[in-house]
Picture 1 (spheres, rainbow, N blue to C red):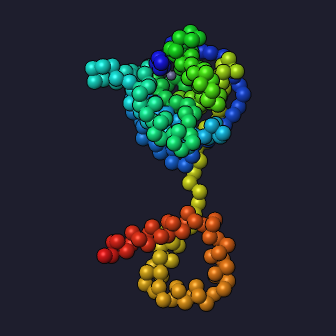
Picture 2: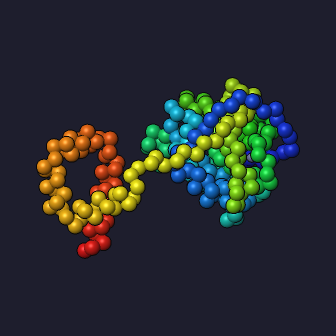
Picture 3: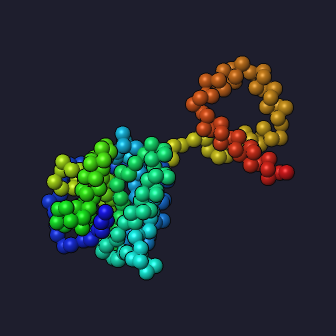
Length: 246
Ligand SMILES: [Zn+2]
């Protein structure tokens, strides 16, 4: 498997179809600290669910393949993916969780914000190598039909991300909008801290309120399933506090 991405000077005819690729909460920070920060050319594997193939739930920055002399095969215009690391990551962090590869994000420190082309089937150039990955998946019967290929330009303080899609039934890359999802809002920490203070200092009072209030009981019952995550958070904070006091 040849996994070299290089960038000959060419300007392919870009498909104008507009689609959207979403990144799960927390992924922007990972990109900014890895592919979006370092030079020379670097990359990160993108993972997610094949039944939701335009939503990236996992971003895994990876080192390039070794040149056999302790150095990584990467320059300002090319990076060679580390096939052994990719396979290990797939087997340990994606497949066991029902996930799969969705694509690869890589940087073009020189500022070229589109994918490089190359001879079909050569595996050289962004587009041919990405098509090869999809073709290999198709041969294996994997239902992976869209290769998400964001390009990061100007890595450093203000990296820019342009997202492209490669599909076997489309002769040229498809431009996609990039959306970074934010953490869902929950109770503010200060509200939670106030409640925890009350629980810690006056457990008798809290218990009597709960026992006396049928309305509160019904609220707790109706919120039980929906707020399970929040309840676990409260419990964890309580335990952390108690540990801190012992
Ligand atoms: Zn490239």
